[in-house]
Length: 452
Image 1 (cartoon, rainbow, N blue to C red):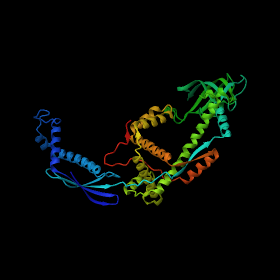
Image 2: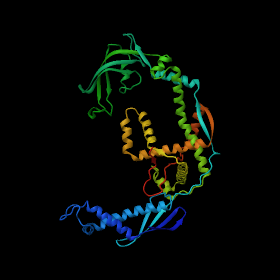
Image 3: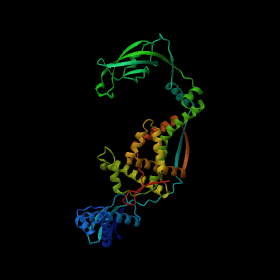
Image 4: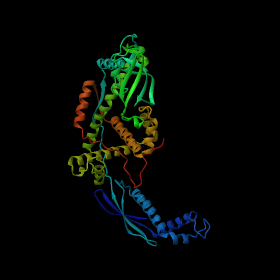
């Protein structure tokens, strides 16, 4: 195979490639021998069909298959030998081909720019943390005590009020007919929360233990049985108990009910939870501080085809090509993605299969009851796994930056954090978040996952 640079202008390069006819003839003969064991023709035993007969009957199709394979292999080899980093799928322009002829074609390539990485040790960014004050902690503990309330029996002749818990059995009918699922025993509802059926709670205000009460309510629109959706139902209820809320005492026993060792342990867990809620948003601010410096200090020529693809990917934005701000944001996202990727490759940052599995496991734990759905989602959607991998890759690169730059620690109160986050969100509604992917150096997709 002969490869020659035909032209080079900016990020566009054209290679001229010639594959010798002898090499193509050899590949064609090998393919005919492979097919000899597969093709079954009348008059011949399987595996005994002469290659010439196969060629006479299927010659054009076999030649096309061989040429297609040669084009792919020679394209990949030419790009690798020339040490080119391509920005998109190469375009092939066939010049001469045919049985008994050399294969001559041109390869038109859009290349990724060469990026000269800058020294980042002088970069500065804020390392935010949140100080959880006693007032915030006390408020959260008080809310927990209300949320995880307990109830105690009321006197038999005392009527139920908003906030009480009513326990009852019921039999429901629609058009005077009982229906499947229309019976319940030991049902407990807290009056005022309206969690059973809309308006059901209000009709149980003022009931007493052992009293019978008829409640009328409309079945939900999403009822499992479509014929019962939005139907008026009559509930004949027998009140078995009425309980009033009992104020929880914030002590070690209460903390143990919530899975903590004691009240001090519960307080620490709450502090950590509050900090993590704010740290997620604050880390985005740190990230932007780093990205802004990267974007400012690197000069990168962004390939037009990447800009076009980025604009096409923007949902509900048909006029994006004519929108100057949209194009500018797209360029910035691509530029940052290329820079981050270059730092990642230079510093041999990789994403392992174990890291992806660990991240999926985290999502599974955060969605109890939907474990199967989460696993199936990633199994059936390779693009979702690719997106997850890219996110992990980006975070690892940013972690690398944080280990090298000057991080200035800043401890904020809750109010200061909220003010900063609000200001950040308002100023970055049209934020340019880079999409970090390992760019291809050959037409076929390269795997970025390294097995441990």
